[in-house]
Image (cartoon, rainbow, N blue to C red):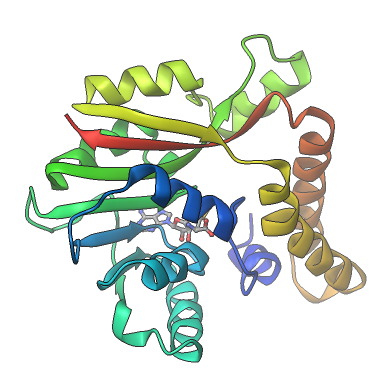
Length: 247
Ligand SMILES: C[S@@+](CC[C@H](N)C(=O)[O-])C[C@H]1O[C@@H](n2cnc3c(N)ncnc32)[C@H](O)[C@@H]1O
């Protein structure tokens, strides 16, 4: 896939995956209480909508980590526009190779990004960062059925072959030394208003311009298939927020 075509479609959108401010606030509420001025990392922050919710809610600095520099610039601009620049610190780094000292993080947040390491792989890398009693809030695409249709199984075998169920992900969390405080499934609005709505508007604007960027037609086609699949089968998989504490 052409990187230029990919970013032409996905750069500058409000979010880089399903989510909503209300879901971020709800996850935070379910994890409370937190210590005063907690040390917070937001891993795979993307454009940083959830970083801003955390920055508004918590009296502390949120360290927002991503490898894609334009996302970090987008977040910095949004934080400055809200007068929150003192609460948001961006860091360009690989979240699979963080150099933070073990046992120093009170709250590790990550929406829709742990799949880059795989659920169990991500937990294994990130769990040592938590202080005693520290918490994690992770959203992760998850099977909501044990019996997917053949079409769906084929799509996810390609896209995310190790995608778990709520039960298997909770079990993996416990094996990684985390207790499960709570879980909840993100509602359909988090997909449509948070992600696919703005993406479809972008796709419509780019559709007449596919000759301008090599590979753009293919990226648009993939996105159309992904959205159509969710429209047909959105009850069989979804994003789940996992609220975890160091056990
Ligand atoms: C699906 S997006 C989610 C972004 C954001 N949390 C949101 O919900 O809008 C995943 C993010 O992880 C970032 N990412 C992927 N691999 C990474 C890595 N190894 N280190 C840091 N960030 C990474 C991508 O650049 C992207 O911003």
